[in-house]
Length: 405
Image (tube, rainbow, N blue to C red):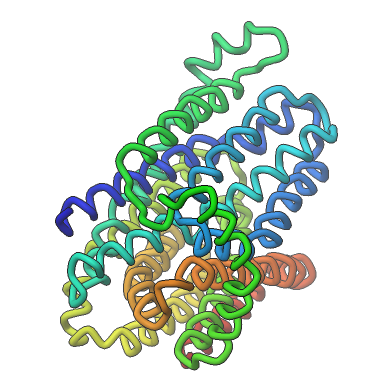
């Protein structure tokens, strides 16, 4: 397989994966409210999802290193299929619904650090001296676009196919989104099984058992490596700080925009800002490769500068009283974020061993989620007791300080 074919295969697979995710983004809360939950119960359900994603993040990364990245990704699709099926048939705040979100969180953890680790390994097998950053940047253009298209289609489905599903007993207009996701998950399972070849996932049953026996050792060795390797440790700390700082933006931009507008009657603005988020992330991936050349591929200096610029932009964003500059700065923040994605991933992957790649990618994802959880709670508290700009000033300080990592 050539590098170009490998990149196309990986980009298509992950864009399709996040396209499926995007189908649920516009309607998930509405779907749960339609099933009889109140906002507090919705928060509990989403908390269950986050908790299980954090709980299983590291073990499932170790599992991928032990028995194969493709195999664990396929397992994640099966678990996700079970979760969506639970959501489709559950009514009210029942054990079944809670179980559905437990499965959804486990599926998220299972998919993390699998095919991205597979791609890095296969890329360097083909070309040990290849430019991983440039390849990841190309993938980073299309993956958020897939997510954005999914979100746009997810908003249309209840108005179209939803009219048909609403006529079925026990279903509603949002069941259309769930049914489409279930169909696409089956399609993704068979496409991944057929198109992707992973040497780690071609073991016999005995090989699987050997992998499971090695599972605790893989996790232990990987975590120790993550703490002892200075570069990996600093990058993981940087990721946790990013999760803490940016979570306040994701949590509070809608109420802040509403406050600037004076009401939420102009809902199209929220849609434009959301779509712009995905486009901005993709644009960052478009411009990073020429920017990287200006830095002579010195990813450390590049990441430090743009992380500091993110913090500075968030400070200015918090000071806006007019919606037009607010939207522009919001998009600029995520352009900078998109610029950082592939250099960070290239630097991180360049400093972790192949046999522990999935585990350490999951370890980083775990720290990201912990940082995000702390940020959601802490910055939510600051916004409630002081103001949203105060919370964003604090988050901006975290982002700026993390540039020193």
